[in-house]
Length: 228
Image 1 (tube, rainbow, N blue to C red):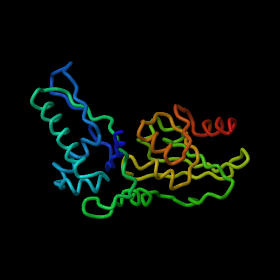
Image 2: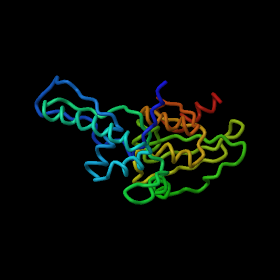
Image 3: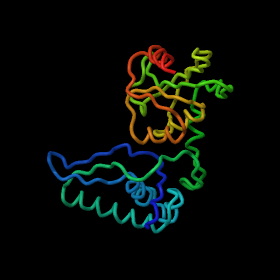
Image 4: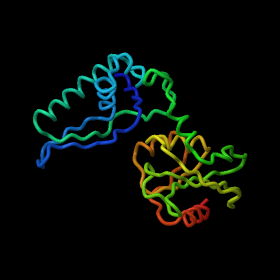
């Protein structure tokens, strides 16, 4: 029986995920996995050795070499043959700030994200409280989880709201919001659109998700309270 593939740690999802030659349509699309992109970025852009890359991604050096060779071949085929390239999928997880080696120093990703919160009072959750988070834009549920710059926390006990707190975010690295919600002890999340990676991270953090919810924040929490 083959050994299970170890999940690769990446700093963040790529800012740009699709590329194509100008003025050319209908060409074959090459899929570069997110972990292949991360190895290529670390080795050829950040000038890290394969051993340094392995430590940062929490995999073996031989695995880095295999991924790197695969990525280079795909990128060469994309450039030489004028094909399309899409970065998608792969066996990876977004860094949660626990990396021991990141750019030659301890990773401060998660800590920086929490420090950027403007009003972090009432983080601790009393016993017997259900804490509901709703990502928002002004008074409405945010249309996409990953682009949210604020969320509302409701502390609920016996079906009644006993505390409400709005948390505003500033310059939060992409992919850290699931861990910020964990830091705030959220039990449930109300959102509209959400990607599969963020969904998986929230589920890993033990947060129950209610997605495809639109409209006002107040109506969303009211509807949820009727169902719990």
